[in-house]
Length: 150
Image (cartoon, rainbow, N blue to C red; front, side, top):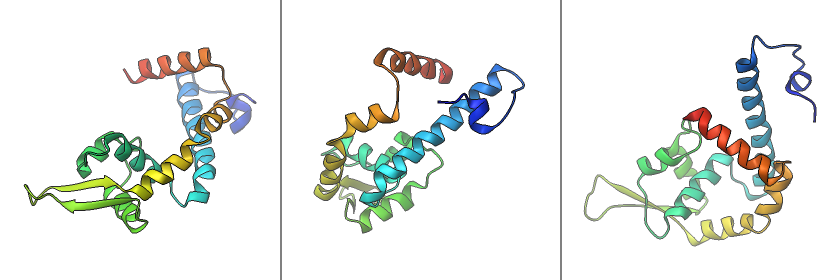
């Protein structure tokens, strides 16, 4: 795999920090494009996939829209629009709370759980092919990224 300079055809960066930020953004885009290809046959976007995984993690408990938004990877996504699309596809359902009419509860449906189960089948293979590193390198990257955000 070429270095970031070759990949984006930039000879140099102003410093190591600029190079790191560009490299992280470029790599995130690379991984996102791989995920897009993986999800295309299922008719969902990476953001919709993220919402489904969040709801599965809470299952059988419902979540409010704010809870979903708080847990989303892409904080710029419109969670309302994503949930509406998932409702039309019958992957999630929404109900007004019986105890508080201002609260709307959102659950993943059996159809949504089945979709994630189908994606889970080859998840380990997919992840290892997308992240071409050994376990020790992956642990190191995870630690460094946690520190970066720290």
